[in-house]
Amino acid sequence: MSIKIPFLDVARRYYRNMNPVLLICTILLMCAGAAAVYSATGTSGNQFFAKQLIWYALGFIFMMIFANINYNNLLAVANWLYVLFMLLLILVLVMGQTSLGAQRWLKLAGFQFQPSEFMKIVVALALIRFILVSQRDPFSWGNIGKMLLLAGLPIALIIKQPDLGTSILLIPLILAVFFMGNMPAKKLWVILGTGIAMLPVVYLFLKDYQKQRIMVFLNPQADPLGAGYNIIQSQIAVGSGGFFGKGWAHGTQSQLNFIPIKYTDFIYAVISEEFGFLGTLILLLIYYFLIMEGLKIVKLCKFTGGKMLAAALTTVIFMQIFINIGMNIGMMPVTGITLPLLSYGGTSVLVIMIMLGILQNIYREYVKAEE
Image (cartoon, rainbow, N blue to C red):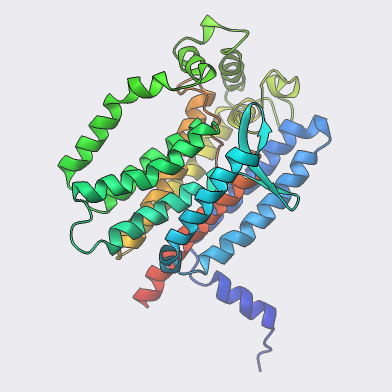
């Protein structure tokens, strides 16, 4: 006679039909992130490390919660989520917390978070819902204009903070939704071409330090002790790691504080210096399997809403990886975009874990339909 333990029954139900590759990659990245944050902050009392562990635990809980919430329920309340987070973005500009010259955080009941991070999910949900409920032609020019306005309003508020990195990430997300929603190719090319043509105009509205970052990206040596310092030190750290690295917590660039904001934007440089080419290759392989599994979920899902949502979330995660690593090796301008699950940061970790939870649910709904 088998003995039933209620807790184990609940655990089995929550883990049933989970995508194993996605889950393993998530756990491996959390372990790597914990080690990297500890190394990058070990000399300053490890308070960052302790907080990161708390965020990982909280994020894992949220991942499991969203893995068990049917993604169609999220699409059903997308408009309400959009209104809520738009109000929060406005509230940020009115009474948000300021750090390093940016006003991006809200502090409520002693809890500080960044509403713009959640817009990576909310904008995708709102656009997908709009496409799904459009009765006739969701991609008429009139509807396209409404959707661009729907996405443009939060982008404008996020840029105002200023948070150029998050606003940039929303652009490929929008394109992924349009592409997977079967927007006519000609219209998609018109939107893409118009956006590229407007880049010089957008440049005029950038703040001086943002323009300086772009110029330094093109030539870091133009201001080696000023705006180019971050990129130069990061490149030195990446290159000095060699094949096997200098060992955990033994990187000279990171431990001697040559690398700025090393536990957030430049965590990849810390990993490269300490674990070398071999370590970063393993890290990139984990990310590769994570992204490929996300694309596999896009392919497996038989419902347009699920396909669009999985594609949007996978695109955002990939672009964060691509831009952050490119930034660390001098191939992209410094934009403040975090490396998923490795960089220190509560809201960033939480949002990525929620994204992974939603991807797990889309996969689980597919498996359930196949049974």
